Length: 146
Image (cartoon, rainbow, N blue to C red; front, side, top):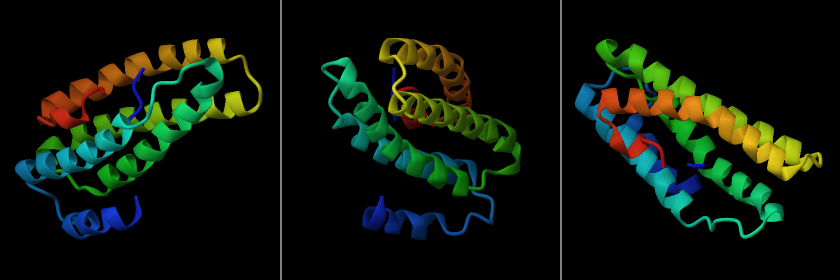
């Protein structure tokens, strides 16, 4: 399973602006790569849980990296000829985050961790495939499954 903030984001916000003018394909690739690479760096330092009880904290830390990533990616305006594929990538990533939030909520309410993680893996599989296909088509390898 993969799990992909403040002052550090200010230069990025200035770079992407308000997102109203469409980016060129090259600008979209560069900015999306920057956003996903930042989230990757945050995810890379999250230790793999040593036991079931640490799984919820693991998911929460992943969500804390992925929520801002999704927001920053949504702020980008793709060129018209890549908009449909880009929106498919955003929709899949949003679905992944929804599944992660749902799993955390269930775990917070005392759900069985084994069943919850199995269900999460089942939910993430097709979403990861959809996201990866879209990111590949856009040439944004930094946003592929990680």
